Amino acid sequence: MGKYQLDTKGQVAVAKYHEKHKTAKFDKKQQLEKIRTEYLKKKQKQTDK
Image (cartoon, rainbow, N blue to C red):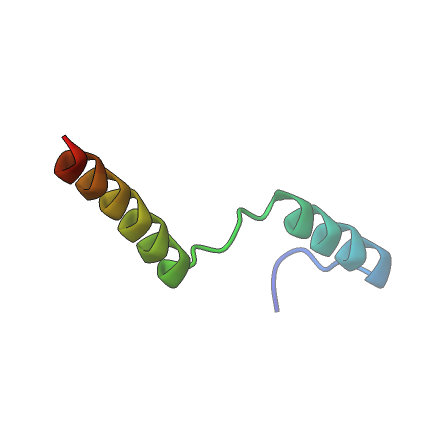
């Protein structure tokens, strides 16, 4: 057990705090799709010239 014990009210408060301050999950598939679309747009502009 930890040095500091929280009652249920304290645990709820801590959980709420962490939920609020949690950064967005890194989605690798979404990131790759974004990079791919940017690359294709750039490639299309180059071929149009």
